[in-house]
Image 1 (cartoon, rainbow, N blue to C red):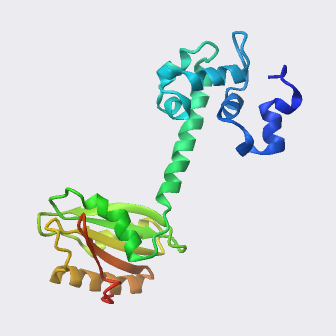
Image 2: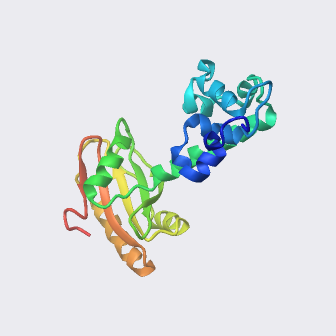
Image 3: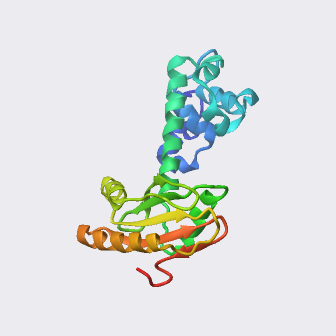
Length: 224
């Protein structure tokens, strides 16, 4: 890329303008580093992003295999691996961002969880673990039960809470019948989790019962 004017070179533009100022082609050219077969790194990057066989753009490139990327002249094994590694890092960063949701109010939790109950014919119990800023840091399925019951033990829930180094947690389970009224077992479990959470310094923020259309919150009903 030395043939380009100094202020048009991707490396220099990133240093002076910041990474956000660069196009996809320029950023990819930095990863490719050097040209080959009479083409500079920008040319190679542009060809990759414009390749309809790969799906086109960064999304298509991220799903392409290394061998497919290597079919482009000037893209060898090392360059292809560097490209795939960089795109995988971006995918993982996006996953981290998706996980760290801020769920503060019961209706926010219900809106997030209710689609997961759609079509379920068995009770399923989830544990949502949060950091001190109420960001969701992990989501796990604790148990899968029958049509009208789910076998949940506080030990299993707190094992997950402790493993996640959580500040607080929310328990969610579904009622396949669509009736989200709590059973006696639901009420008893909530009381046990609340007491144990106080002893362990891990706050039970809420227990939600959901269907695909409705929800019940122990917190909203002042039952915590």
